[in-house]
Length: 500
Image 1: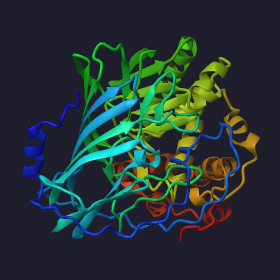
Image 2: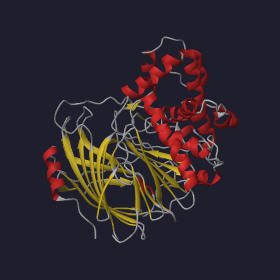
Image 3: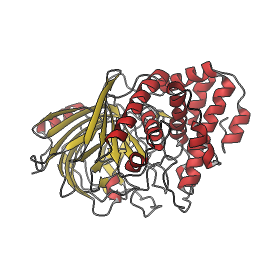
Image 4: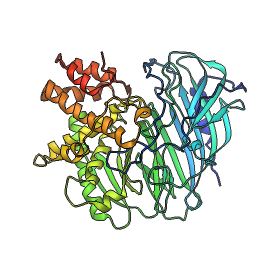
């Protein structure tokens, strides 16, 4: 039985939002689809297998992400209330969703754009009810992963609107290239709900490419309730926030998150610890207890190390989830780590399982806390996450000096650090340029401006851009607040379009 969002939610949202009536309008002009793949593979850390893929045409240039911050009025962040019922055996999810969206753009809005990633899979997403401020909407346009939602009355700056949706997901089989969906060991719900995309001189929803991530997120507050269709099922749930559980129901609250994800399996076993007041959990499968324990211990150290270097851990918990997905993939408060890494672990501290686990942990700062346009400027999270691996080994294993040989030099990387996902060509060339050359740039920058200045800059960058979407201009602006060193030669060496 599908459980509907409680009436109290609706009343709360109506009281908080502007009173807007919805009416059908003509759909806006569609954008072309540039790929036939159902959601291109997420960003891969440079150890997984790669296949050559055709180049994708360039996307538009990044836009300024400045937005108004009202002193009072609408909520400070978008609010998402989701109530979902999972039928694990039938691979379905029934969802009621309430969105309270504050217009913080500084502009009057006549429509909203929502990303609907499940719609990239054939027959996955079925939209039922859609209401804006209590009125049914018929004039929307859903195509590819984009939902154009017209507003009958303009949404003024510093007011809010509420949206109610009911939809059903028929989950696709997950494979080694896609986390979303089910496999024989687990069901993974990532980017599973429609969300209002950022607005920066227009709605920011890039098309998928053959490499990297195309979605851009602003922070939001989430309240999620998960039920099982069969409450007798024995299920373990890993999620990006701590759970309140009762009668086979899981309730979560995630503040200031960019994504809310969860993974379900009857096979999960767990290892847990508290690190600096943060509960950290490792979810592992089958016979990988020893490997999972080893990875978990190093991830726990990474939480402490990066908290010291970059600032406090930004969420209420962290979950590390083993998955048949062959690489690592980050989300707020949770990351997936490929099962092949567990199986092939050699027991040393410098191996793919530990190194990539550390990389994904650092993404809680570089992606989660400090956001960026992952399509057009992926180096801002991936280069920093890769270089954070080296910092981890320096601080915890100073005698382990082979990180750069193991992680970077063995691939003989080339390419421009500021490569976007549409010019990545294939995984190997994209990873070599953005991840590996990006890490080399940060290492050279550190040498040029000095240890004390470099680490003061990193922490200040993490602090100033927390909860925002950073750009290259932000990165170098904050760096310039700490040093006047001439780095023009480094910029010319590493960047196709060196910042001015």
